[in-house]
Length: 343
Ligand code: NAD
Image (cartoon, rainbow, N blue to C red; front, side, top):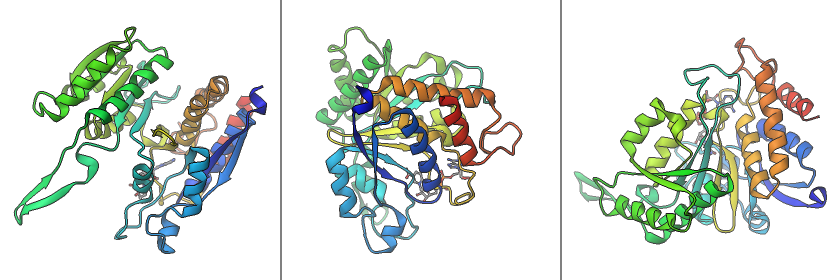
């Protein structure tokens, strides 16, 4: 029975507003699915200041390796700190090659795209491309950055995108590249997606150049179901998508590897509002809903999604960033409204 199914999850509350949004998210997730066992673990700025250069101590890594599942708040990177950010450490260490970002508005919110039927997912390759950080100065006046695309890396992200499309009963995918200019690197990615498509005959595959895709996403966002793309294209398009639905505060994500999946909000630690009980936990709650689906608890995911949508539709218990009256309620009051909607 679902309720006997114990699921240990590493909870990294993180920095700034992290503990506030993590408290709200774990409350509503535990109320929806009783099986979660939260294992609190540390990472982020405070650890870097205590001398853990990577920002992630060994005890946390051990728990992540044991459970393979993480719900994570934002981690701040102290400016001027020499080491890598804790986020980059985790992504590299566990080869989290796939970044998955659903783009779907909350009901009832205003904005230029309020009445549009936007519901797509950006699946972004997350370890290769120009972001591998392989740069050098050819001469004091010429800088070079290496763009690396591999067949294996492209196959992994293509499979992840097609499998996700199949699991969500979508009908089409759109590969987005700049293969007209970067014929070898972006071209290889395009070829691999097209080859992988043969394993998923029920799904239609289109291709779009990234500049056109940016325009289409604004003009006619309804046309997209699943976008699969290289790292830098995906970085920009996924934030454009977040903008379409009301900003980073509402946008969840999953970072997927072979052995570990990390679910997190897209926003940062919001130091300007930290500790004031006004942060919006929606993005982290939605990340938790993605985690419920990932562990096969689709029914629970749907219950929580509906409760969240009910609270947005009612519109009387929203945090200040999205409240109609510009005043809004506290993080705790919003959490309680979601708990009530769940009952
Ligand atoms: P930010 O996302 O923290 O904040 C940008 C603006 O959005 C701020 O005005 C903030 O108040 C608001 N905001 C963000 N999340 C909100 C929420 N849930 N509810 C209400 N308002 C919200 O971006 P930043 O200021 O550029 O970054 C701050 C720190 O976060 C930096 O140290 C950065 O490195 C880190 N960061 C971490 C992650 C991550 O862990 N995944 C992502 C982005 C930034």
